[in-house]
Amino acid sequence: GGEGGPPTVHSLDPIKLSVISRLCSVGQTAGYAGREDVAQVVHGGAGRLLKKDMPHEPYGSAAQLRRARGYASKLLQICEDVATAQPPRKTLVIVHRNGGYKLLLRMLARRLGAGAVRGYPPARTRAEKADAQLAPLLGVGHDELAGRGSCNCALCEFNRSSGRAEAKVEAEGAAGVLCGECGGTGGEGGVDGGEGGEGGSE
Image (tube, rainbow, N blue to C red; front, side, top):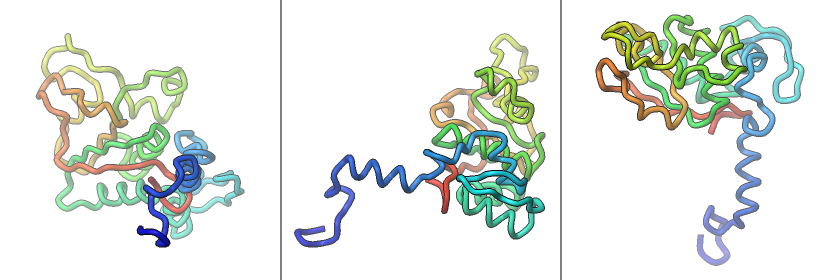
């Protein structure tokens, strides 16, 4: 804006702008989106979410959907878009932040079934490998020595699969990895997702 006009992004002090950006993304500072217990509450379980006690709500109920939409609106919309696409199709989703990436994997697995969801990169940390729900979704690393059609990494499995409704979710920066079998990253559709936070996602 001009002199005396409303403030713009370019006119704000960088420190103030940083504070505002953090306040607009509660999930980055207090949401713990990547944790399993958070996903359980988002899916309707009783527990604490954004420092508030939440009662149990049946999965798929209006109350549960309102909760999920309030915490991670963009991730919920991605789940609905993938699940209701006609005709059903494989979809590659790239998520900018680690917490949102893990939460989206859990949300898609609940919506589509674990067999229709794959994550990349594979489980690497001790916490990821010990997570009973997340570890199977992340799978194992790519095996360049495996024969054609025998590598069991998420990327190769995704590219071999049929065109039914399913999703492969990648953390940003992993999308440049090529499948050793077909030379591509796979997916007919593409969606860009952020991390959950109160009132929506980034």
